[in-house]
Image (cartoon, rainbow, N blue to C red; front, side, top):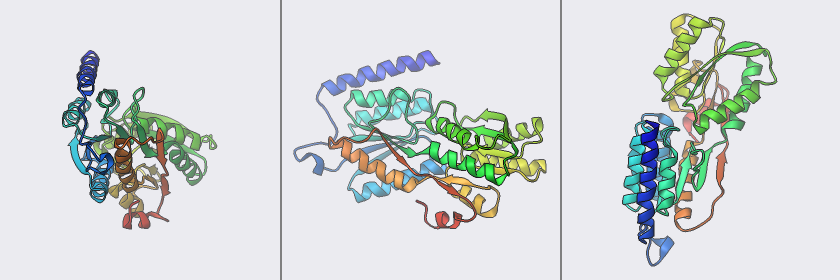
Length: 318
């Protein structure tokens, strides 16, 4: 399979290198930046509330900026997304906003877009070895560190921790792991006793993983689901096991996650500024299409969300 992906990558880059050399480009013309821009939005999986919120924000911001958005949903499949980015390049879009569907083949679309001289804004996940022209995401290291520190205080520095990971190799999984470890470092009484990766950051995966962890380690009293959906799955597993006194935290600030914090199902989450990220992605795509330079990274603040401040985020998501 990896050989097939590698061959696909070579073919894609080679094909669109020729397209770039032919002198064709997106909808640019005599007055350059004043023309309506067409932006391709490659979404990892619209079934996930986090990605859906970004899509909605991108579409709203594009309307304000008089830009056209073409949306492609990979439904969690990296190879599908490679084909979708090829379609964007064939359509000669002016810029691409790219949320990789996973670590596998994530570099292929970036290299293809760059070979076709189409700027690419990476959102949430930045392919290792082939970053976008700019990368927009929550500062997950800092946010997860804050979350880890809060957990340490909440459990009085003692606990058995089960970690339900996101997709291995993706930017948010790596950053949240680094940050949370730093956050709980000051409370050596918290011991990680189990960790397992999900494939799609999905709630049913969180449920099954947490169920297995509780059977193997009944003393677990902390769960960190790297996404709200995973944490909600863990909460369901805890309820079904009839276990009490378990502190469950997530990450994202999805609608369901925020409601779960409000009703006490989750102890806390990190609210990501999805609306702001979508708007910034559109602004960045247009600037890049107009030939402007942007920072390699544009990291946003994630906010620790508990019962004390959740109502504000439910009423008005940042």
